Length: 219
Image (cartoon, rainbow, N blue to C red; front, side, top):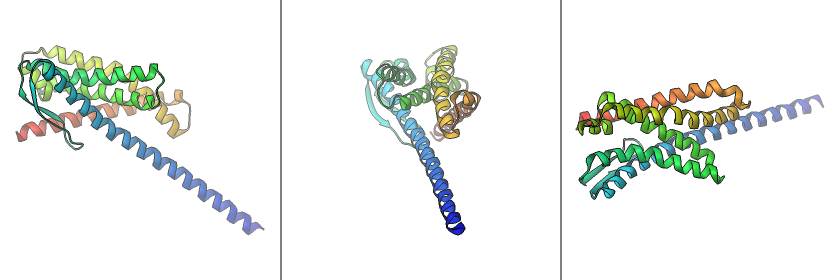
């Protein structure tokens, strides 16, 4: 009887360990898929802003390059208003996800939790891209500076999008994720969510600047 009890207890422990392991694996895959999807979606929305701005100003788009392992770019055939075309990417890239998330939250659409993350991701990426790019004079920021755009306007855009809005949207999402992973209440994960968000913000900024710098060196 003792042997049967020990075997039964051991099987229960093993099943419990496997359940925990599978839950962690599913959570990891979900986070990885969300990050990859957000990266691709952010680039698509950003480039669509360039395209819409070119079309609105009477220009023509030659092609749009989108790839998960590189920085996206839009090649323009005719560009009568260069500043508008450049501003269109980061402005629409930050505004469109924010409006979509507000509508989803207002109407209680399914998946608004993911929309919130995607919105924060786009705010951070576009804000850091323009704000940090103004110092290195690369990417859209470098183009705008060459066109005579004041550097302070790029910094203001970066601060407004990548700092307060992103913190409000993004860190709340991280609180929910960490509380589920650690199985604790949201309040106890506040500082951890800020730490994780800060590290991710810096990582996004580093990747954006490094890849764009390599591309311009190759050109």
